[in-house]
Length: 203
Image 1 (cartoon, rainbow, N blue to C red):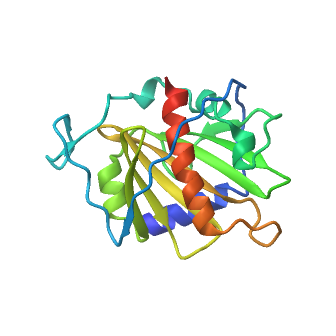
Image 2 (cartoon, helix red, strand yellow):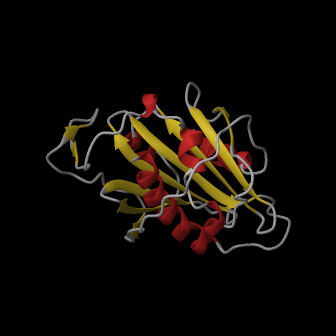
Image 3 (cartoon, helix red, strand yellow):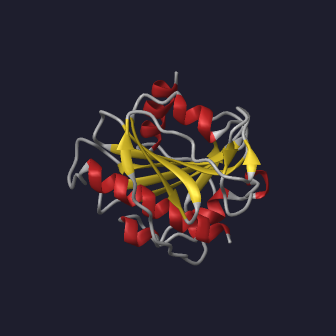
């Protein structure tokens, strides 16, 4: 089920959505980590998850109060090979029903980005069920899992910002059959950078 949802999410990179607002970019530094077959949820002394373990976050970010397209508009889109002169497009997520997503495209670099503010599922349960090589780390102190599938055209991130909520990052080639074709390892490194910048854009 998770694999199907992630593959469907990659299709969003070719499609797009509807309406958004422009803003100013905010940049952050990415944190690297090691790769495992399945991630262990970072533990700490803050909030408890639905499974009873603790997640160490600098603070809780309630995504129900967040306009995800305003967040995307504040990112340094050009540095990710995305068009900075067009407003991102937002709408309802088909991959995560009940959540909002926002899409930005990069025509020249053949790249695209979708962020989803997932408000009805926890990061831990999603990551544990994902069929992918998982890199466990953090972005600006928040737990981050980078998901690398066998399909080389995309890379995904799961940014744990609140109990029962997370930001889903889908970044990759707009059209896998066209050039230029950014290597998947580079896409995954950029996912970490995007996740850190996203925390900065959330304020």
